[in-house]
Image (cartoon, rainbow, N blue to C red; front, top):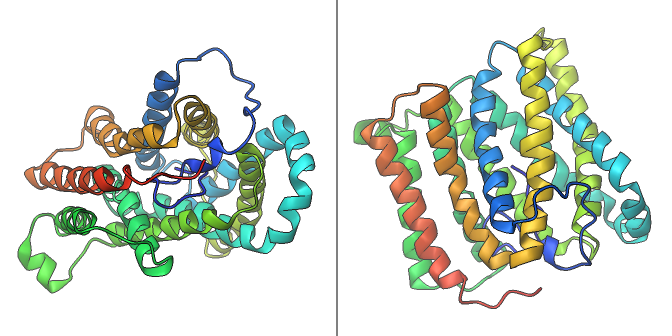
Length: 326
């Protein structure tokens, strides 16, 4: 999931799309912003399932490269004029943008797809749902954003949900710090993405689509060293026919269309209202895992999902009262 944003207070970074002119979007078949936002979050939820389907069909770091190669190619073909127009603002900050793409796109995705080899898709989806809280924590510690008691309660509740899922509801496992390696991977991925979201506060004042095109292009380049590492360790698995289908889904739906749809939704109804839809990602992900992967839903999954979403909801009750810059 990659969402362009400028304000960390908005869950999972969405504000950037609202600061410019209407975004030139080549897809006009669907105009209802609520449907666009539902589709975007459903596609992001589908990425969780795709990650598990990819196991045994294509190696994880190759997925990352192919994902960003396809997305960058589409963006450059469709939006090159936007990038060219904004380049004088983007160029002075290219080093910062490179770090953002390396951690928020390449690093996040690499750990995400590696995690799929070690843990269940349900775990990935529920833990990923805690990203808004990680962003809030980062904004408090690094940006000195003021937080209310209600927000702190929300943070504690969400962290409790993450602890439940990583320990599989076992207090003994929690106290012994004996966690699934895949859960650790996705937690680290969430921290990478939270750092990326916080950095978006300082991005140049350009159109969201120009910024996304540059970040996707840099992500393609920064994924090459990891791909070479996978080749050198004999871990490369070229996509099977099913693997190619999975890579195309990941590139076109969760990466490209979701980004465009979400920008369009933010443009239509504003970042605060659109931000609420992000909380649907772990729900869509969990439902798709049960329906398509036939993963078993245990009591601790339900408890963890409840805690994560409740914590986000409590925190957002305070956050949404703060006026955010357009």
